[in-house]
Length: 329
Ligand code: 5GP
Ligand code: MN
View 1 (spheres, rainbow, N blue to C red):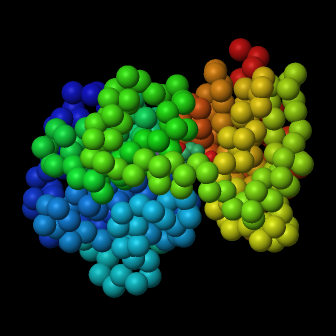
View 2 (cartoon, rainbow, N blue to C red):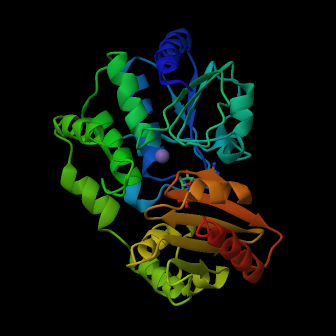
């Protein structure tokens, strides 16, 4: 979308909020800091506007995000009888498929839908689409929306927005960061947010189980193309042996990316019916492009996908071959 249209979409969003009584907010499975930050920020804002939003979540809350305001207000889709909301707000979700099969029916049955996101692969699946692919995080898009509509930010909302931006920029390290990102962060710090609690929760609270899973994954490491590609995997057995939760694979692929000389890090995660792919790059490989060939998408430096009906060995060969093509250009 052309940036100038965003203002128009934001105005439509305001009208939709004003006209709606029942409002649902949701994201996708395996929520991360930006999903949960953008959901709780929107939840807080709607509460402040006198609305009674419903935060729909079909997953566990990672421990690292459990400090977020309003985080325990979520409702499981199975516990919601009436699927028809006046307004459905999707946050940090690039396409309908990614929303998950238990949440999608709410989207479909709602009278009006809004899609607020920053993924380059977003396919504008809603009636109102506020997508800014230049934003570091959906929380940055929300900051722009809230300030443009003069919706007042408070300490809770600032905490959520800061968390989303920090977590989607790898703590302000990724290429996506611009001077504007720091300006927003600086403004959010003015609301007296608990900077230490956010940082310790997000970056310095890895459990022993998660650490054990990381160790097992690292033991599987293989290097290709002059050590510029590194691949690791986790199996169902790794999770059982370490007692790790399904969310504990988060952070493994970043750890591998951070090895000197590695341009692309790949994590293959064995699931019961498929293999999940996570990709990270450092300087030039377009991860979203690679992942889009495997039922996925994402960003240039971080993307994910899924392999169906392939063994771990086949998935490994397939992804290495595809990533190698990115080096031949
Ligand atoms: P992760 O590797 O952490 O699962 O995902 C990395 C990035 O890629 C995230 O920004 C996530 O939103 C995006 N992503 C992961 N899996 C998918 C997918 O199946 N489809 C799309 N469109 N994006 C994905
Ligand atoms: Mn995001």
